[in-house]
Image (cartoon, rainbow over all chains, first blue to last red; front, top):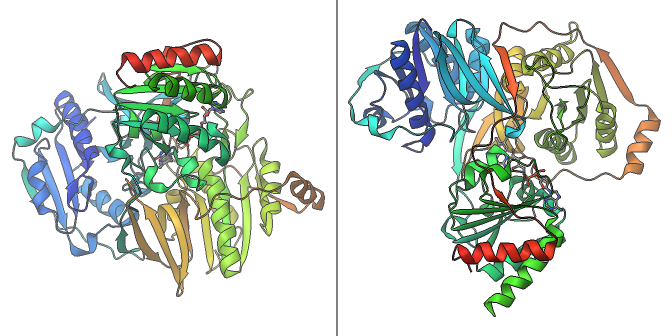
Length: 323
Length: 258
Ligand SMILES: Cc1cc2nc3c(=O)[nH]c(=O)nc-3n(C[C@H](O)[C@H](O)[C@H](O)COP(=O)(O)OP(=O)(O)OC[C@H]3O[C@@H](n4cnc5c(N)ncnc54)[C@H](O)[C@@H]3O)c2cc1C
């Protein structure tokens, strides 16, 4: 790797996202190993206050402009292209989140650099940058090498520890004058999350249903089990998209992050986007007909079997025990 | 509005995925292909737009095993045209897919229609080299928004809803022509009876367009593909439902959960 490392700082509504710290952590390690400078690109309107929380970087490149309120991917990609040329950057890290999605791909076209998605690990091997990405919902991993250590990497959220402790160091902040193109994509407003009947992030017991539940009528099985356990039901995305369970009960990347005492996953495969939202649960029990389902890699206890057969029996036994 | 839904099938992960002998790719022999969730939603969103605002829906898919079924299903659901882009696309990545779709949309001298709306998946499980949408948008020189969960016509252009995280969404406006990466449609993808799909097959309305495999830019090299070692592994409880249920109750009790 010949040039610097740059991370695109992600922030939403005036707060730094967790992924920003994760990227700073990886960036710092790579910077130490390769003796390359680490830059944090902070783009937005009214973001100066965030700059002094990015101490893990050697330098914060600040582009502040009122036109950068929730900028579209194309605008961000154009700005980053200028920054990587100005600062002679080899490696760019962006967040693999919905907020940043699209930026890496567009930047790769415009800067003629390869783009690697779903990255879980970055390392230097004899000076070369080698990445591990997950494919097919985490069922396959792929090791890829970047030519000359140059490229754009989308970092999978939650795969790296967030290196908070390094942020005390004050880093140099440089206001970078960069021309901002006016985009035909215009941000209008935020739509706040629907307030649900229950807040699933505050529950001790969650019974989560996935596509293995098969149809809406079978939801009653999960509801009964949840009631017996004193909890509520939540769901994976496909169940929410079907409209069977309200959006406020979605667990995962685009839903809620939950950490209940008990998370009972019924017919959920354990796609990374789902696991992101529930891996912090204290006890995880999964029931799935597929012995190879990735959910069994995060669960503490697993049952390989048909939930439609097991759940009613389990509910009865719990009720009987509770009396 | 002329809606184009661009579809690319992905390996069905319900089947066992096997790494090929070269250790760098998947064994394609054993693979079955299917539309991913967000491809299904892109098609649904296009059909919903047609129902609401009129216009046409053209479903376009890259050749792959099972692609005919996908295109006939799109016709049965209400698409006006179904086009198969024929070529050696199996295993091709997002750059190549965008290139092929771009050359179809701008075939010959034909420019992209001014009222074209291109809908496609926001992101899929095999997008290792990036999402198709942003590549295509840059190729066509039109605006792009991904992670879209709602689309409405507003004046000459569109008002789209994009999802961020934790239920937070944002609204954006943009002009046509445009590319949208659909995360989920406003309604669940419709079901279509098999008889209707058969009728679509009989109608033989599927078109085919030969597309040369586009040149792709220099990229990374895949050194190895493998199945991940599970970091942890659940303690598996075995037996008939009765027995498993007893064991689960014991586990719950041990962990003070009942
Ligand atoms: C940008 C983005 C954001 C996303 N955000 C989220 C998110 O927030 N939350 C989320 O959940 N997903 C999210 N996803 C989708 C995610 O990738 C998966 O598609 C989804 O989690 C799969 O849901 P599932 O496990 O219910 O379905 P599937 O993956 O289809 O799994 C169903 C499982 O049920 C099992 N099964 C079938 N029948 C039975 C039976 N009778 N008994 C027991 N088991 C059975 C099967 O073996 C299978 O493992 C997102 C995807 C993207 C691209």
